Image (cartoon, rainbow, N blue to C red; front, top):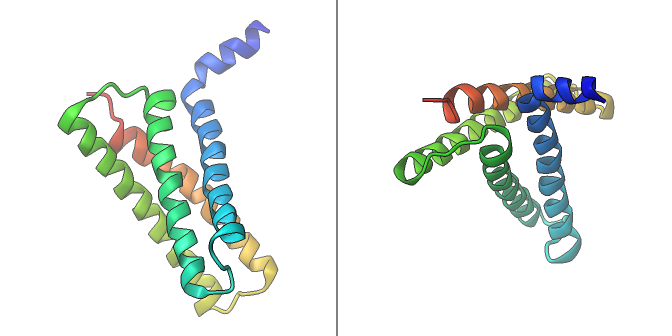
Length: 145
C-alpha cells in the first residue's frame, strides 16, 4: 500500500490531470448527448453545432476550475486569475483548432473517411490534445511564479 501511495505522491499532478481529463470528457460528451436527446435536434445541422459549442464551453469551464484547484493548485486571484483563465481558454482553443485541422486534412482532404480512419485520427487527436493541453497548462497557464 505504501508503494501505491508513494507512486501517487511522485506522480500526483499527472495522475490528477488524467482523472480530471476523464471527468472533463464525461462533462463534454454527457452535456452534448443530453442536449441532443432532450432540447436540440441532432438531425438539424445548426442545432448539432450549437450542442457542440455548448458542450465544449461546459467542458472547458469544468476543466479550468478543476485543473486550477486539484491539479495545479493555483492560488492567484484578481487580475492574475482572469489572465490565467483567459490563457487556459486560449490554449484549449489552440489545441481544438489543431484537432480540427488534422481531421480536415486527413479525413476530408485526403479522403481517409472510412470509419476506421475516423476512429484512428480521432484517437490520435485525443492523445495530442491531452499532451499539448498538459504542457500548455503546466508551463504557460499555471506556471509557478
